Amino acid sequence: MANVPEDLHYSKDHEWVRVEGDEAIIGITDYAQNSLGDVVYVELPKAGDKFASNEPFGSVESVKAVSEVFSPISGTITSINESLADEPEKVNSDPYGEGWMIRMKMDNPGEVDRLSTAAEYEDFTKAESE
Amino acid sequence: MIDFGGWDMPVQYPAGTIEEHLRTRTHAGLFDVSHMGEIDVRGPDAIAFVNRITSNDVNKLVDGQAQYTALTTPQGTVVDDLLVYRLAADHLLLVVNAGTTEKDWNWIKSHHAGEQVELHNVSADYCQLALQGPDAVSILQKLTDVPLNNIKYYHFTRGQVDAIDSIISRTGYTGEDGFEIYAAPEQADRLWSKMLDAGNFGTEAGVLPCGLAARNTLRLEAGLALYGHEIDETTTLLEANLGWICKLDKGDFIGRETLAQQKAEGVKRKLVGFEVTDRGIARDEQEVIINNERVGKVTSGSPAPFLKKNIGFAYVPAEYGSVGQQISIDVRGRLVGAQLVKTPFYKRAK
Image 1 (cartoon, helix red, strand yellow):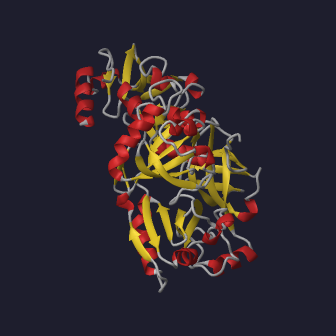
Image 2 (cartoon, rainbow over the protein chains, first blue to last red):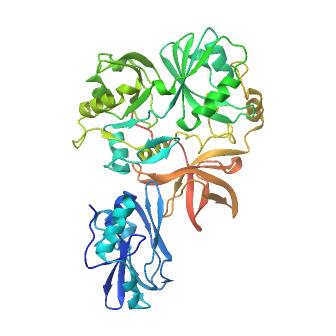
């Protein structure tokens, strides 16, 4: 069963959001990394780049496929996880920790309320894998 | 699971593509390739007939030998690539790609012109399991009395594997030593489990079951063409660097004239191998750019798990086809640098 931490917000595109003040940390879920398989390459934006919610901010590649990653909320990138350039496998081994992707300053912190809770996301992935 | 030419096939098993790929290079991998098609050609003109519709020279085969070849169009392009097994002077077995089996079957029937042969599509009569890797001989030897070391590369024998009547062929699609085993389809389950057991599946150096993704990365590293990617009905054998299976002086065959002419004049474009030199992974269908011009396309692009590089095949104009040539690849709008390299990308130590 995929790991779905209680304290995060989730998108239907399988990204998670952790709120820290007016900043959000974003990555992909355990469910997502598991369906992708071994991650071999992660392409991320630069600090300063702006994204609207649901806009692709980068891509994750397995041996077989490329998947876009979407920004669950709108905001401006403050930093990215540079270590994924050399160790993309962290996305598999620790998707909610060392495998985080971007940190962004939220345009509107209220936006996270539109995302799913852990329980809702868990139901969603169950329905999707059936 | 994905639908692959009407077959439900796993892209990967739980170990994952990278582990499956590496284990095949270092120990052994087991592939269920029962989806491949088989066409039986029997009769006094079997060799003459197959020699007229394929590009390699079937006359060179002895009983118990296999050959890589192609069914060619009059334009010298490829209907399919296949293996021809010589079971006897009047009995050949053609092993073709799954997705093209129906097309090949119709093509072969429609090009039959009075030769004394009986043709049968026997795809449903065989399962095929491929055991590949440096440990393949020792694993399979546990299950058979056939002295496997006496079977030379691209040769085969009929014998029993765990008391199951089989064709044991020293061939494969991974760049490793190994075997492809053909048997009755109802034996597939048992053969599969016996080979996993004999190969100590579940241990660190044991055999791993491998899915379609590893099959693809292994063949790509080994520089082998995949139908529908490097070769199809728009690419000639010479463009695809398959001149070695074009025996232009063996006598007439479909496409011979065009291929002879192309050989004399030289090809305008050719298939080349490349290694990505920037960060990024080139993928199938992405465009190749040289001197600001879009001059060709990637036919297969992927990470190469054993070489730990991002590699691929592409078609480029022949004048740019030399090893060392710098190219760019349009990776979803970003230009990524690459360099042409010799193929195969990977060659096993003898």
